[in-house]
Image (cartoon, rainbow, N blue to C red; front, side):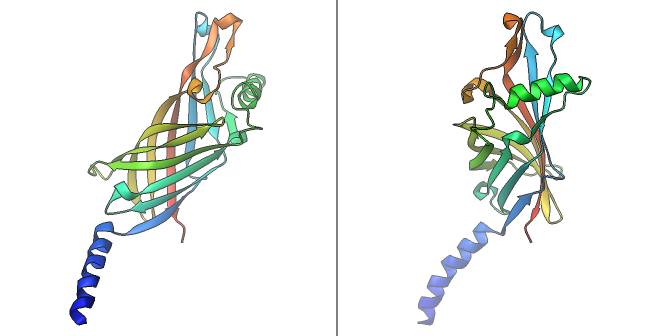
Length: 206
């Protein structure tokens, strides 16, 4: 009986050791930053301006498997109505006009699609260097009622009780059913390609 018990126990212990320590971390929105960079183009683009947009309400969970990062996963969600047009150097009137257009039915249609969501499907890790680990996180981004696969490169640094993650990714508005805004018959227009940059701080849930 003892030999039978040991023969069953050894594979279980081996599996536990290979999996390593895991923990669940919660995104701290107060210490994190999510920005969207929108660029202009067109014949008269010198008369337009680029836009900087920040998210003010978002949350996320990271399931971190320390020894095998490829088994880690994450979810992230932002409230569409929490996006704010910053546009340094522009008037409050201009910022408000862009804000209204962005949240309206021409672009985000925030009333119908209140949330932007990312769910990971796979994680690939490179060896740590200078205290940082580089990841490629594949997942599905849901925006404007459309879900598309995306890959996001991320650099993470472990700290006491949590981690910090930095990265950026680009995507096309047209992939998600939105039409880039243009004025003057297209002489000034917003580029289809947007860039998202982020600094995410996450800590153990206690």
